[in-house]
Length: 288
Image (cartoon, rainbow, N blue to C red):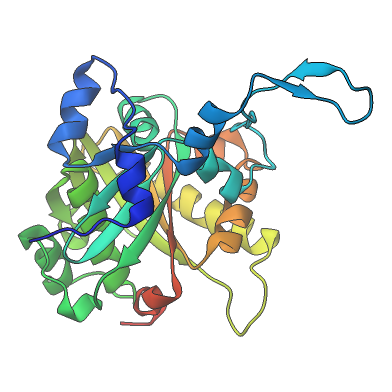
């Protein structure tokens, strides 16, 4: 299959960032991703070290804009402008992931969780995609009900293509005691770490804004359910991932800000992966 790069991406590929000489580099290569520096990084390299003030006429030092990624007011656009970019190009979809190593670190850190964001652009509808065998299994086997099978299938496909995830158990194959509480959508292995994965969707309906109250309610509900399923599960997983499909960047910004307001015991050690989608991804949010 021939992959066509846009001019912007081709320019960025000439300035690939050197990967650290650790085990992460081998894992990164195994996932088949490109390490690409964003265009703003190239602009920063050309920026002069000193700039003349229009008020005083004096020169002052200047450098790249600093972004505090721990701030509760983090902006999605600023974050993506100042992070190295890892891109997966595939037949079914493309994923732009600026925090590949952060996700890996959060997955391997048993005590702590975190929040990671990525972009998802489909090349075709879900029904026309050529899925992996594990994704087909998630799609075809009986589940606990609900209308989110499509989002769960694509959730696994993203983890499989970007992180070489391997499916261990589907929703109904996971055992709990006591039964009757919250359950996890599927169990997989990512780079040797056993994970439970729960999938949800966030969007603004009927033209209304997605509010911070809605974001906090959604994250609280899902994260508390994850904590309960971890306590009751008979599976010996290391931690869980909450995969949130976000309808647009405004929704993503609200979700990120709401996440930082949650109590530590609610967030626990869960990794929240927010996948920002485009208007061509409406099939993810439809029932069925």
